[in-house]
Image (cartoon, rainbow, N blue to C red; front, side):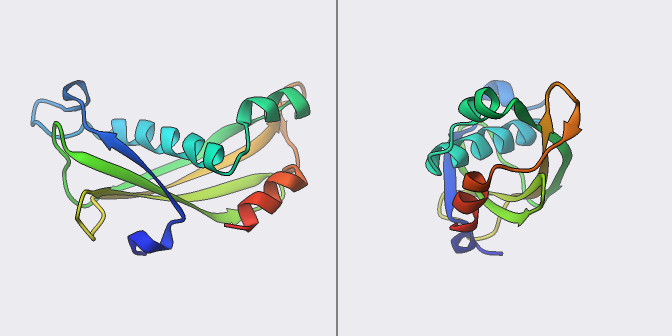
Length: 139
């Protein structure tokens, strides 16, 4: 996929505390970047995840997190995390993510996050709300 395949991106500036002894972004921080970007993607879709929890009694649980590393990012690099929904299931969502540096066409990191919508009382998956499916399907 290319950058243009993603309908949404969120910018970051790599902070010193996010780097390791080698001076590159510590690999675990990419999952944080992914998480922040997905929540900003939902904000861009005008879908409030906090309202989702309050209205449905369900919340999203991450059940899969994958990152493939292609090139390093370093302190003070300007990067953006691109997000797109790749699969909408009965109760699950899959997101493709890619981290690009400013003015670069090749991603430095690519990944996938899968969420399951889970009833917080029953601790079981529950169907996604139709209005969320409609918003995601439109993009």
